[in-house]
Image (cartoon, rainbow, N blue to C red; front, side, top):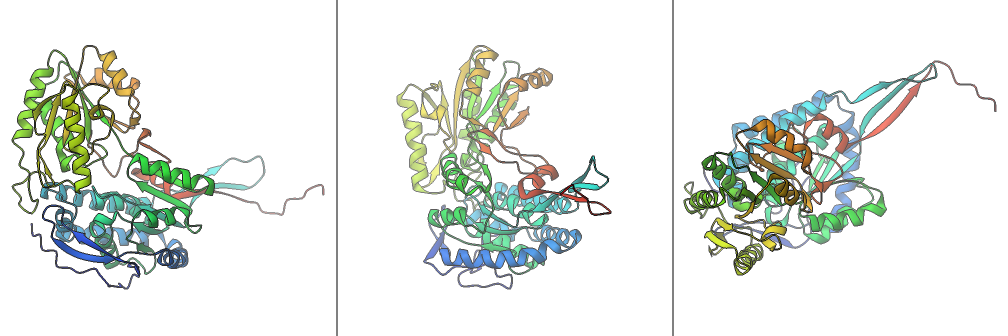
Length: 486
């Protein structure tokens, strides 16, 4: 895979009209090397106003197209990405610090999202209703108009596209604000793909910027629907700001996901699942395994197996395909991770592997005997750290799992999957995976969390896509004008 990133985005105005920025330049830098890759112009609130006005105008014509025309654009985009996956993968490696395996995996997710969203365009979008009057009564789903999307840095391609593609499929226009650290892989590269696939001018706008621009997007009266993926802290602020404005808000937030290893599980296989869940993309995933609950009879063996996995993972510049893991996104996040790890050790946790870093490269870390009052237990670390907690009874483990403020993803590993399925009734989580990792997502599945992990809808599948990015409209029709006593 090449890491050539010579494409320049600064100052370009594409025929699709999706690059808008008159503000200060944002440098695009590699978190692995510090190399300056490019720069983009940030967007001002005036740029936002102009983009919304253009989007509202373009949306009418886009929504009026036959569904197959919208589907064709998304299918063409998927085809173009399949033919040249490096058009996105190289930016995921260079800009987002993705290992090449993770980058290829993410490109596959983006491709599938485009394909499934194309199918959404032709999905039934209404129902016939019974009525006491002699009339036709129909409920149908109609586009909300303009959807505002705010996406994060960690999986920038898919976490942008899983809002953008279904929103476009059902006839909306989109204003996309990617994380300023991943403006290309989370924004411009995707818009260029869709433009080449035939997306009309004005339907998609990419506006780079930080928190101030995000707040303006949330408050803008021309954006009735918001789709945000990011931290719970930021999500609470968006919900608080959008509530009085009575906007349709979809918040997909953080997680402190649990892996429950039952005493009958194959421990070598369990350690593999645990390593993937905690260390993939340096643990910078909302679905990352943040807590490993292991029965006391096998805990020491599991910690040793997991530590062995961690010690054998290569960490370094993801441009080198031999490195399994890349860098933490920035120094602030690295220092937060290290403070949590050292604090846990000071509280009595055992450091079985890792706990060290060079520049932004943090070694995959295994902590044994983590206390339930430790930040390594209670917080979303967002780093390559695997805290292991022992339990004596399944009831105790379930109580601990449910005691978290989060409810995004839980895994149960066992040789008796049906027994695990029965446990699922007692676990508060948006997703439960039996004999698989907490990190799992498919475009066909309704994905989202409960409690502090999300509110307002789901991603994936035709029903969730329609609910999230459309409104219900009731229509009645009868042959003759109804007569009333007035």
